[in-house]
Length: 379
Image (cartoon, rainbow, N blue to C red):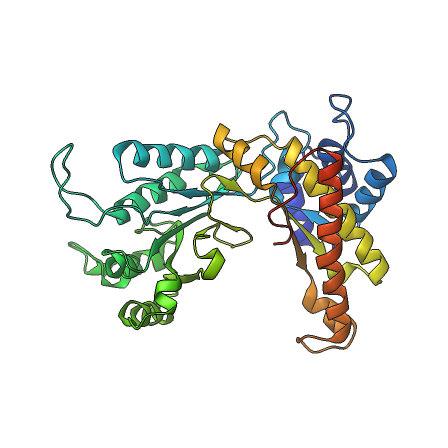
């Protein structure tokens, strides 16, 4: 069933509900809890023929729902979403505590988070209401980092975090150097934080649980200032971080994303809804079209069946109805057909089916279930 012993071990250790459950059993449970009657608890959201065919595709590894679907199907809690997008919406005591609470709530369901903290006032600014000076955005990211360090996601895995800041923020240069562990000497031992991290991967270090990026917008694209960008390039070449988040034109406000960037949004508390099609396991374009059709319907059903960490996520999900159907196994698919790792006419025709069928199927199923049509279809 599994191609490698590693795959079998991961399933047994991470996703099987008991020692006797097979992958085919898990596929049946996932489809039943997302699209079926949940063992008599709900009405079916897809026809029996579609559910049976989808179960077959999943058992053959032609369609793979996101990991949270695999983990939560069959449980009382149904936190099927893999990631949540958060924004600091104002720089206030209440907003800081609210963002921290939302982050912890999301992480405890098993979803990763991405947070844009660009609205933080610069460090050192005077605070009128409470007195003192502002901390700036970096300590807030440190706070989220420590939440991530100490929250076991959904009881099963460590947290995934992403943090971003606008390139024009007065603390941008400090942000660029916030993970220069090689420059952070530990008193009394003549070693840097980087040295300790190399010796013990789990040794705590600033922002070590979080990927970080600077956000670049139209003003940067059309301007002449290159100091921040050049320093960003230098840092990326030296340490790998911070990364670059480019958001231009009609999408320049879409600065929210998760660490893997399957989803981008401008809406605080937006949520991803993921599954992937394994191209390498599919032989014909007709079968591929059917897999895309049923996988898209599956993710639409997830918009109804998934539990969410707090009320605003539900509101944004109803508004945006995002699904994220991705592709994997593309290199193997190319090798099977003696293509190089580059665009080929046959691949182009398959990708056109992927685009058209994912939108047609998702729109049709959303209409059937009285949901808004998705703002996004593919990851």
